[in-house]
Image (cartoon, rainbow, N blue to C red; front, side, top):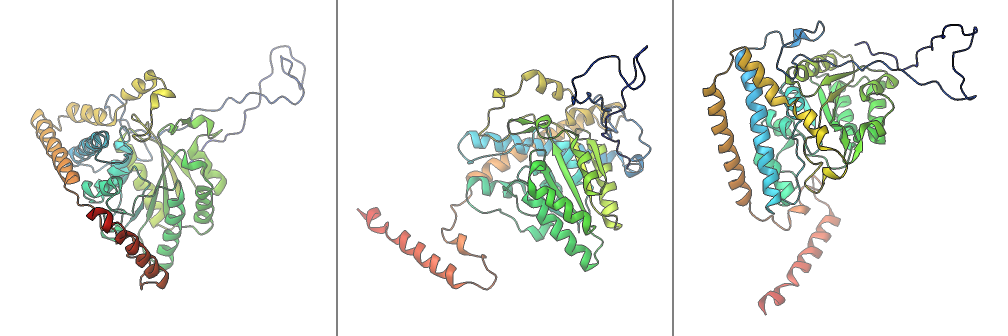
Length: 396
């Protein structure tokens, strides 16, 4: 993967200027303005749904069938429907918080479907589409946000780690796991998801360093949705995020994160590198968070509606639908059936959340240590005494 240099080009001399000078005066020590090239962007489907060729990445999706394309579309539609239902449930007081993926479906479904079963995923707290691809029941994602469990699924059952709230720490976990995979001699790969805001965290830089030095089989998948809560990307980095990989000694690539085919192809390429012992890769999925950062956020306070409107024109689901229709790979019956399926999913999620039992008050003390611990036993006893102190009050 060739990444262009970020060095400033040499300024041209203006006509009639003296040797070694330019045609305009500058104050001493004032740097010349940089005229950087437009960042490279891997795209296989235009916003209008037109298939475009790419010599380097076409081979990774060359054998994709109409049925598989419909499957990618189904994945994105159902993920968006689940996400919308979760947002509504939070607004109704059924969840404490929710982090929407609205607008990022293609990046997540494309990368998620690129994984092999034995690959391992380290997500943040927004990878609902990747969880769907890994076979995690959507209702299990909601227990933590309802406050009834600490995750809701067995990470080893789907090779999908629990959601990570601490920003950026999962990249270190992924790097350590990948180093272990390499030492075990396995040919599987590891992928770590994080956002553009997390790219400014020290944990991410440390993960880049360790993965490069130890040639770890890990893919760093950065979903650049343009906003780290209310901070735009241009206030976080002087260069496109994918170019940061150069300083750590491994390749980086920017992919159109609203293009599910390109996201699939680029992630397959990066995972292939990892499995072949070629070390880490940074994938920057250039996309947009069409909703709020979380349901506690109000994006109207820091960004304009016309910005969202411009990105809505690049909607990942509409893009693939246009392609399916133009290629005659899907008819109205398919879309109608999928609409009914999505409504059924919303109903199932709604009913499952409202039926979740209250958690066992003592569950927090379980599985802290594999073989138990005297201090945990002491804390459990103290908590039991505290709970018992309310008995008389309740009986009054």
